[in-house]
Amino acid sequence: MNRIGIYGSLGRMGQAIVAAMPALEAVHAGGVDAGEDPGPLARECDVLVDFSAPAALDAHLNAALAAGTPIVIGTTGLSPHHHDAIDAAAERIAVLQTGNTSVGVGLVMALVRDAARKLGQEWDIEIVEMHHRDKVDAPSGTALMLGEAAAAGRETTIAETGVQGRAGLVGARARGTIGFSSLRGGTVVGDHNVVFAGNGERIEIGHYAQDRAIFAAGAVKAALWLAGRAPGRYRMDQVLGL
Ligand SMILES: NC(=O)C1=CN([C@@H]2O[C@H](COP(=O)(O)OP(=O)(O)OC[C@H]3O[C@@H](n4cnc5c(N)ncnc54)[C@H](OP(=O)(O)O)[C@@H]3O)[C@@H](O)[C@H]2O)C=CC1
Ligand SMILES: O=C(O)C1=N[C@H](C(=O)O)C[C@H](O)C1
Image (cartoon, rainbow, N blue to C red; front, top):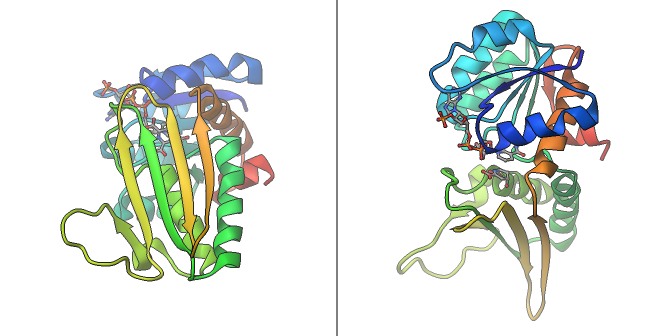
């Protein structure tokens, strides 16, 4: 159960995943990129990983469903429609969707949830992320996950409390909101900082990715873990044992 097929195989992450496979005793079963039929690869591998584009997700999920093949979804910029489709697919196949496959972010998620719960509404929460100039979605998938972790710590959701970007005469900060700011430039692999700003003091919990190899190794581990599992929607913390 170690033959991994890659959707988005020629991209930055696709190539990093191919490079990560030998050390983890995974076998590269092949790749599919834009304009190619995802069906045959889904039938020829034990598990799929998707690091492509949101516009491709419906076709990739349908191919995985038709073949009965588990799938790890790392693609970010997903809409509520995509999450509904993932929930529906997870009734028939094993699916793991995450905006970040690294060990470090897995741990930071737990720290952020805990800090938000313990600090309470008196502390303002702002999430700042920076990525390379070619990233197309904002806020990053990781920033949104960290926001949900902070919101969960306060027993709310990002849908209720999230504020994305500020410009113009926006007024004073509303209590209880969670703000997001996105920076883009250069070759930054992925920086995330969760700022807890209190009265006269500030706490920052950060994660700074220096190499895509950390995401790639996590994606391969997640795929090997998911292969052969019963239908369901799984999480990265289950893979990492966090
Ligand atoms: N979960 C995580 O840990 C991480 C997630 N990501 C996410 O992974 C995704 C990919 O990132 P990255 O590798 O940097 O991006 P790239 O743009 O380098 O690669 C994307 C790849 O997907 C291909 N692709 C685009 N559309 C389709 C399609 N319809 N069918 C099949 N393949 C398609 C592209 O082909 P073409 O160039 O021909 O369009 C390209 O090869 C992003 O959403 C990113 O945010 C990134 C890092 C870590
Ligand atoms: O596009 C990227 O590069 C990354 N995307 C993911 C995200 O949106 O959070 C993960 C990582 O930060 C790199």
